[in-house]
Image 1: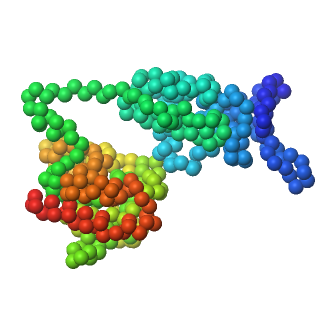
Image 2: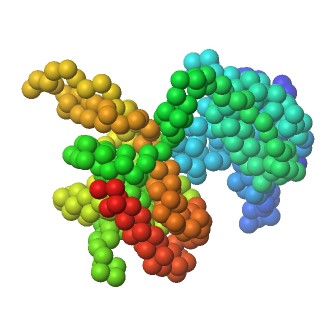
Image 3: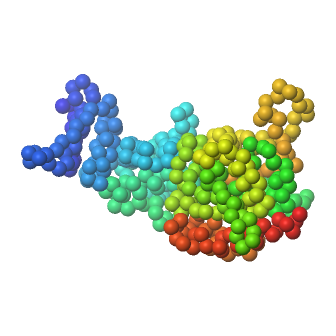
Length: 397
């Protein structure tokens, strides 16, 4: 062996051919001999990461000596967590931890990959966060914290140094001229619509591919990925005290990296009533779908944001038969103030709050608290709240 290093549960060494050999010992065979697992790798880093991940797999903890770098922990995290976390989460963490493929985006590994994880401090992380745009800084801190929390569970470090520490983030400096008409400027920067905006969109969006997703995002407060995952069997129309109400069973999500997966959190699994007139229209669209397990909104999750933006573009000056369908619907919502489809959930929260719905019921409707098993999840409080909100739309009409 050219080089070697010993640990409590294993060892890594370089073979004469240049490859790296790793061995871990855990438990005993039936004949009483120690159970050993070995593997060879191209680099020492790969061998170290395998040793850490294998230790966690076999014992639940990486009972190793000190001197483990952030790079080694990150490589071990990938080996242990890939396939166990959502693909989108895995890709997001990878982007913040090791950067983009083109190398233009610096990452945690770039700036502190060689640092012993026991020496990572909130101060060092804070300094790095100030070098990023605000939104990126928040997501980058979340990714690093998740990896360090895994390291705690693996026994590599005693505590996550980022937990309990209040971090500051760079301010978003948006130059807004408030001198001409401050009311108009502030109203244009709001990220929610009012009831009149929703009703106007209700008429203009009819027949567009993203209509069903919009109906339940704004009418029931669903996340976009939840709306895109709804099937015909997830929708029903019931009579509640003489009123017909559309309810949706939210239990899955469809993202740009996962065709179909569980909802964001266990608390997100819920049954929600849809505000009228969005509820009746959504039920009508759902009934036009042939199979019970067929998606109601068939727009690709990876394309939904681009398509939604196109609805607010300048309409084409001329239409012709050979024009693509996506181009024909361009600008259909041009008269409305643009906000992302994801913000329709915020619009629903606002409408419910303005209708007098309590914070606890409002949170319950949006999957922030409680479990689907709890009986009051199906209590009439949520449906009554939706009926009350529906009255606001009748008043505007």
